[in-house]
Image (tube, rainbow, N blue to C red; front, side, top):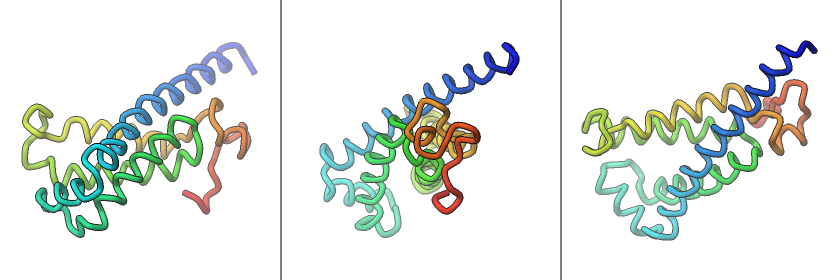
Length: 150
């Protein structure tokens, strides 16, 4: 491996790790908030008020997805399928809740959920990187979570 290829691979690994950590912290915090601060009944009521279909089921499911999914991103386990689910979560939030308010977050808009969806989608496409449980478990050569899990 040439030094230029090694440097490129190292930068890619660091970039994936930084992206995983940043997204993971945000998703973990939002999941924590939905489950423990707003409580499950509070989250269900808020989702119902926002017009989210099946809020009684979706509220806790999203709260736990974000809590567990954020943790999974931070440690780098099952990153591709978890990131795909989180991207879908954010697209749902964008279209069901935030789109009518426009782009700017200070008006309840979709700029944050769009960035979170894009980051999660990127991780779903490229995987966790070498500094992850996925790399230790599934190997470093391709760093692919088995297709059955994706």
